[in-house]
Amino acid sequence: MSTDGVDTSRRRFLTAATTVVGAVGAAGVAVPFITSMWPSARAQAAGAPVEADISKLEPGAMLTVEWRGKPVWLVRRTEQNLTDLKSLDSTRRDPDSEVEQQPSYAKNPHRSIKPEVAVLIGICTHLGCSPTYRPEIAPADLGQTWRGGFFCPCHGSRFDLAGRVVQGVPAPTNLEVPPHVYLSDTRLLIGKDEGAA
Image 1 (spheres, rainbow, N blue to C red):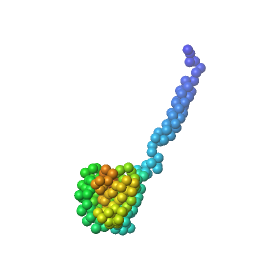
Image 2: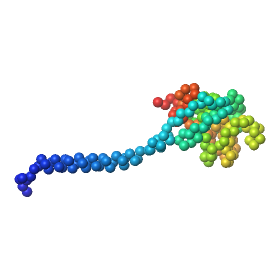
Image 3: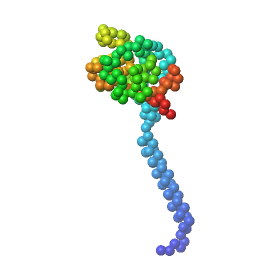
């Protein structure tokens, strides 16, 4: 077959132009498809660390913040609360926090970085209910041995002010301690481990 009279440079130009237009079109289709697989801004924010200001948290008071869709309780324990924690070890299922429900820096008698501030995920380890904060000492409905803590009215699980589960209740483990770090004496970042970059 003869190529006499055929403009090969024009043919090469048209072939190159068609290839470029096809590649741009393919990229135009691929980009939205690929970006649709990325988590949304809302989903990314749901897992992001949350900052909490505890400067106005009075002794005995509790503040609740949300992290990853879960309630996180911040409780400022009193000196009496800390003294009482030591006396409760014999009635706790896991007094020394042997079950991994907390970061290593919170594996201590008060299960926190600062003894006076408890940081706990407010979800019962039995069936996922949310216990109520009961800071009072020896109320009639909880008995003479109650020294403040969290009571789950759904099935009767009880936790002390360090989130340690009481023996003989349905909850199998202590309340979870989320990763957290102090940015200052009054600012706390939940969702980031102490010492993490």
